[in-house]
Image 1 (cartoon, rainbow, N blue to C red):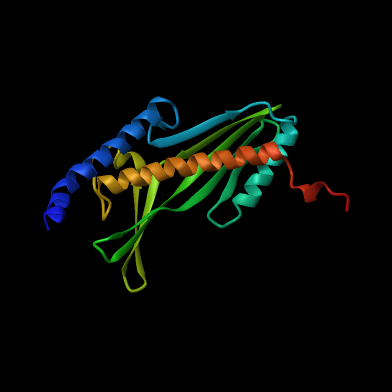
Image 2: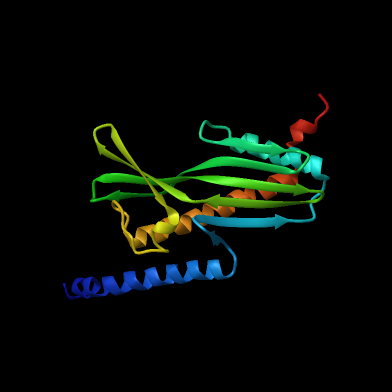
Length: 204
């Protein structure tokens, strides 16, 4: 009983410590350029050098990646200019963060992202940006409610709370978002470095 009481007394302190560590991590990420805030946008970017292939070859590889990975109704290539070496796509990150509010209501946070790729001979620049959370939960029966919130209007940038999403959950969701954006860039880089699928180069 005494141990349980001690844990209950320490719980707020432990939670505060974990929250502070996560906020410190986010600040470090921003200070070191792991991500940037650009107005209402959260941006992750990377310049990939020393690639095999000229601009046209890399353009085809980038477009091939987008065609394979952005092939649903919520994702679309918005702009492609082979001469200028620019491709801009809109993608969807489902279920970046999930939790149960009030012990009974499942809530999911998702978002759209814009992926811009600038292409030159032997190198590409990838810019991934997100500005808005899409919150969805089941209000009753099969009725779903959706809300949209600017990412920068919630923690870690403000103290604002929205349905079921307190400061700690907002911070966790933000960390998950940055990780997902980096995973997208890493996957694109790997695809461009590896080139076409082997079967595409086979003599048939």
